[in-house]
Length: 262
Image 1 (spheres, rainbow, N blue to C red):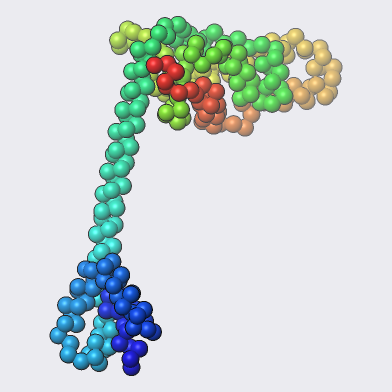
Image 2: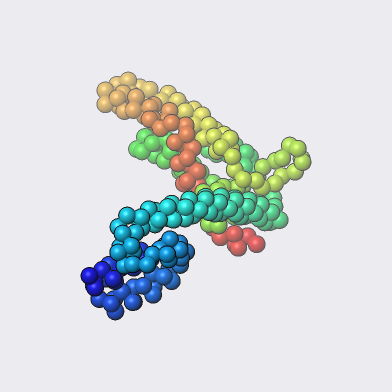
């Protein structure tokens, strides 16, 4: 019976030794003050040890469950509000960061080609075409773009480590009639891919005409020609996949710290 006296009214834990009970009781009361107070209120009119034991056996866990149900509901509500507040804060920070980068870019000294003028300057070499034959259209596009990026600060497209995955382009704003930097949109990337695709097809048709006799006279080259044609047209990659891969590659190639242009 003595061991039964060492039952914590705060959590119901049974302690074998009184010293263990005293130590546990002290911390349990500290961390569960509200619950302990509630249990004590329900058991304060109990006059005998048997009444306490009966309460612990029958109603103790009901009290605990009801208490923690209410507590968890409140915590869930607070957690949901906290998540919403954090997301709002993140959105605000992201917006400020985007505006800050665009503002810094617009105060920089860059006043050269716009993004579309730069894209229009792309040329397809025999080496670029060969890279498509050996790999795929994406690899050919990378070769073309890399050739017109002498350094990260002389082209009308930028990326910064402070804003992962974002690209910025220098364009002509028809509304303000000014050249300015802006956050890239899918339209700009798709325009670049479309331009490159058309030029690769044109270059491929020229190559096919130049090598027509060889192709017609060699069965292996005829098979390769069909494979090359499929690659030039993008292979199995969807337009969306091509766009996402180009954006990610551009970010990796161009990213730098914003402090370098301040």
